[in-house]
Image (cartoon, rainbow, N blue to C red):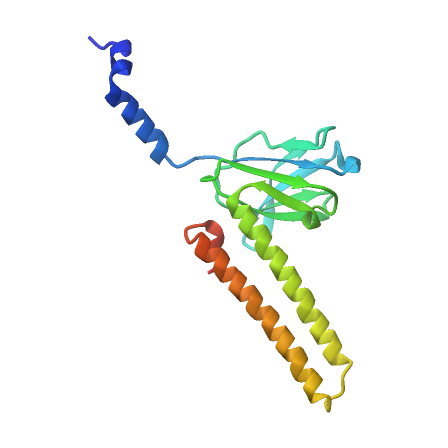
Amino acid sequence: MFSFAETMADPRTWLLLFGALCVAPLSAQQLKGHIGERTEFGKKLVLLQTRGSGEVPIDSVLIARDGNFQFKIPFKTLGFYQLVLNDTDHVDLILNPREPLVDLGFDSIPLEQHVHVRTSDENKRLSEYKFVSKKTQAIQAAVFQKKQQLQPADTAQLAALDSVGLRAGKMKANYLAQLTERAPGSYFTKVIQ
C-alpha cells in the first residue's frame, strides 16, 4: 500500500523534487515598482505589449498612495512592452518569463528619464543600452550642429568633428558588443543581433 510518509522519507523523492524545481523554467513574471513623484499617486499605469509596429493594452494598475505599484497577474509572454503613465510618459521593458521579477524604481517624472531597474537582468541591459544610445546620439547631434556652423574650407575642424562622431559611434557599437557577450542567450541579445 502507498504511504505518503514513507515516500517523503525516501531521499530519492527529495532529490527528484529538488531536481524538478531546479530545471523547470519559470513560467511567469511579476512586474512591480515604485514611483517617487507624489503627484502621480492614485493615477493609472498601463502596460502595453508591442506587437508588430503597434502596442496593445495588456493590463493596468493604480499607483498606491505610497507610490508602489504591482500588476496582479503574472506575465507569461516573452517580448517588448511599455509602461505608460498619463498617455504620454512611456518606458520600454522586456518581460521574460524566465526572470521571476521585474522591479523598477522611478525617482521622478518623466518615467523614461528616471528609471532604475532594481531587479531584472534583461531590463538592466536594455536600460544601459538606451543610456549609451542617448549619449551617443547627443554627441553626434552636437557634431552635426557644429559642422553646420563651419565653412567648407575649415577642413581641419571638419575632420576633427568627423573623428569625434565616428568615435562616438564606435563606443556605442563596442558597448553593445559587451552587453551581448555577457548574456549571449538573453532575449535582448537575440533581438539586437
